[in-house]
Structures are given as structure tokens and as C-alpha cells.
Image 1 (cartoon, rainbow over the protein chains, first blue to last red):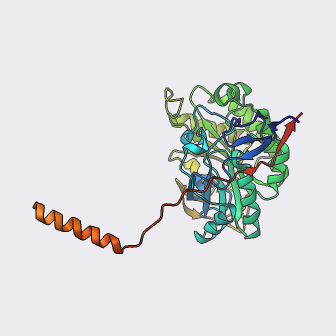
Image 2: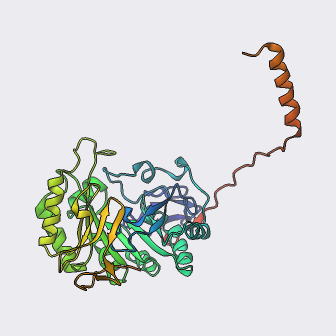
Image 3: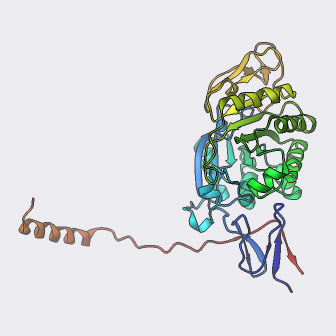
Length: 324
Length: 44
């Protein structure tokens, strides 16, 4: 009998001979069985404001117990966490933190949620899934920041326990995904639709990189797709790029580009469009009806919150999100 | 600066003191137990 295995977790579909490691570096074929190499071994453990993920419509002002292991299913040239996302588990310092201990720590630190973040949680799917099941039983919410590069079956299984997802929609062209991330766009769009359909609270992040994905025609196309397929209430975060990893030759995103992207998205009908990684009025939430400021943010800090029982305090308009 | 005699005295005192302190055994890190992946198949 053959001992060659195929991973069915992400669209990479790695085919592995004995002792071969997957592209994400987190899986290995041992004697014809596929194993996770990172289960219970996070290399990053922090208590973060939920706004850092970023989630702006999910329990604002609370903290998330945030974990990551080594590995990623993509290899983006602009990765902000490449030191761990593009590393092998043996090359990182790890903690011994099985799922039950993650949940206990989240409770001890008074976190309302656990965030699977920093690297790509799909790479540590089993660890995330088992932790999410225990967290749910203990009244702790589960959130993830993911690239959405995952097959539909595992995503649907995970969705039962995932309360919120922030998906990186890195660009709106297959060319960008192929050239810059060594992946493809279509599975990401499918993941967005599946998460929405499964009732997982969804926010989207788009890192705007000068010359690579800052074309307003493409941004308009992306926003129209979001409105048509996910609805106008899905928050969209335009994030400022800073030179990093293999893209050190590009400048930081100009403020004007981010402001224009935000206007383009709002003109396309999206109600909640944010600008991140820079001080900007687009960090705050405004009521789509009366236009008054609902949540004032400075960086990750919530200065004031005028949402009461999920409604605008001034005009009583319902604001989409998970507020309690 | 301490002279040779003072150094020797401290060295011996430290040696005697260490005889009465608790010994910590260096433990070998247990080998990582691998967890079977959830989504995979064997190719025939």
C-alpha cells in the first residue's frame, strides 16, 4: 500500500512522500500518516486589544488572548510577520500550551475571546479547532485573522465554533495572488461567502501596497463584489503598507491613497470603511444614517462608544456587529 | 580589589555553601508528540 499522502486542508493540496514536510511547514508525513507539527506549540502568545486584529464591530474595548504557531499556507512578499510565518516550527521558540491551557489562560487574563492570528491559523488548524471547541464550552468567543486560503470542508467544520473572522483580501486580481503571494484569489472569495453564509461575524482587511494593488479601478471592483456577495454592512479595513520582508523597495502607502480608497469603497455602497496603521478619522465608526461618531478610536484604544444595545445612541439605527 | 587570600576564602565559602543547597536535575525536554492531521488522504 502507498504511503504517499495528500493534505486536504488548503488549496495547495500538498502531496507528501514519507518524512516530507508540507509547504506551510506545519505538517509532515510520518510512515503514511499526516501529522501536525505545531499542535499545542505556539510561538507567539499575547493579550491584545481586539481592535488590533482588527475587529471594529466585535466586542469593542475588550481583549483577545492571541496565539500563533509557525507556518503559513501562502508566502506573501510583504508579510509583516515573516519571521514566524515563513519559519519552520523547530526554528522558533515555542511554549507548551495545549488547548485546555489556552482557554484557562484566556479566562485568567479576563479575555472575552481567543484570537488565532499573527501567522495563518489554517496552518495550525487542529490546534485552533480543538481550542475553539473547549473555549465555546467555557463561554469564551473564538476569532481568527486569516488569509481565507482554506478548502470549504474544513472551513465549514470550523465555522460552527468560530464567532468572528477577519479575512485578508490581499488584492482583487489572480495575478497579484500568483505573483506576490504564490496563491490564488478564487478560494479566498469562496471562503468569504462560506463564512458569511455560516453566520460568522466577518470583517475584511486589504493592505494597500503602492504600485501593486492601489489601482482604484480594482479597488472599486473589489468593493462592488463585497457589496453584492456579502452585503453593505461588512466592515472593510484599508491598511497602510510599510516596507518589509521582500518588499523593502516600495514606499509606505501615502495617506491620500488610503483616503481615496476609503471614499471609493463608501461610494460603492459599503457602510463601514476604515483606515488602519495610520492616525486618521477613518479609525472611528460613524453612523451610516445620522453620520455622528459612534465609536471613537485612537489606534487600538476606544475613547468613546455611543452604541447602545447594538443601536446608534443618537438616531436609533441598528449597527451590524457583535456588541455584547 | 580583593587580594588572593580573600578570593580563596570566598571561593571556599561558596563551595561549602553549595554543598547544602538543593540540587536541580537537568531534565531532558520530552520529544514533541505529533497530532494526526484532520484533513488528508492516502494516495493509492
